[in-house]
Length: 285
Length: 345
Image (cartoon, rainbow over all chains, first blue to last red; front, side, top):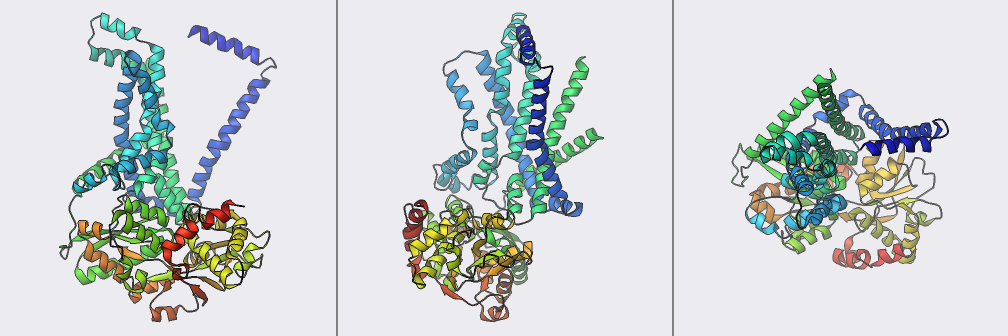
């Protein structure tokens, strides 16, 4: 790590002989990019949302269909997150701390939900659980519904967010190696104690980062959920789908109002992350 | 302050999630047509794109009517999307008690591929099971700056046309067939005419709503080919001071049929309510709502009341194309006429 840091420093000096010209240029470019692609759209969403006044904004959000969409989105996220956490921890732990046959295959498979287009992911579940699919008739006989119902939406959300936590943890855990764990075990700690006292504290920021990314993705997922939803207003529309429906109904202000709600969720997640980081750092020093 | 707000919103989120979980656990009661006065049931109407506003109003009227007649509370859920896509979803298991789609071919597919209703479904209700019809008209910008009066003007050089893709959109297929009918009856070679028309198409959206948004919101194109009801909705939503409807000399009679999906309704025990719902569409009350939303009513007295809204024109039915199966195979199937004349440019 020390060597790396020095390298970065000298590289910076070599790259920037013109008294900060390159540096300022790069920073300016980055800021322009952020303003153009992140800040401007965000401003546009909130501008569109309040264009027809805050009364209409509140009415759009208080609509039963909008509230149902909020509930469904949060439900899908609330189910996907713990599953993600469990899977991510298990996968990260297994891949970085043990050697086993088929490890590379597992690493490759974890990335599958990222490499597969979400629409295809949705269609996979339709092919599996739809009426013309492998398990559809059996499910129907037992009065169970997966596609075009809440379970399908949850399934799609879990699928597309599955690699998030694992992906955030694996490089971190690889970097840390297992010297700390070996030390703990040699001093007589049990496996569980090692996990709680040594591994978890080491990876908590990576874990938090992964969870935040996963929740953002879960709330914003459109493609896979769109295929599996059936678009029943007030029942199987998540927030992104509800935004689309409103837009198609020419209720542009309402569409932006609900979109701003989605953006607000993202901002809240971000704020929460910053706050937790700030608190923990304050304690540490 | 910010911290408190965050905490408050999280408490709210937690409460909502908890409420929903209990609600899911508690809503497994089965509807039955044995439904007694004072009970309630839910119907799902799976429909195509431009009927959202229509069915919102019709559903409320039907719920009142049904409660008065039977004492049963009926709630109708709506699902909207491209007609072909919606049919596909029903085939794959979307629990539609009732379908109301853009063309009979899509309901035929449900009967053929999933056997959820009999093949002769279209004979079960009056007027080919189509309680209202529509036709294809043109929407132009105010003052009609490109002087577009009829189909023939669409192939002029420099005229930019907006219409959706007939491969994915039911409305787009009607657009295509209307232009075909015009060419046939005006001594033009239909293939050349349509090739010239589609060469003028600026944006080929997936569905009718997408095309309207392209034309109206994004200001692309000189003329939009669309459902008559969709054109009226655009006038209402975006102002008659910005657009004009042009009614061509000839167009297609679009029958947009409805059907009870027997297998699903039987399993839900909602068959009687579903049938009452579809029959309600033929009542003067529902016909009046349909006419107000720009659909051509079948009821003569209602039609007379809205005579000035629906301009008379020559209307050609799907029969003159040999019915949907034949029209689909000849024009819109993989490698069909549309592929030849659009891909070959």
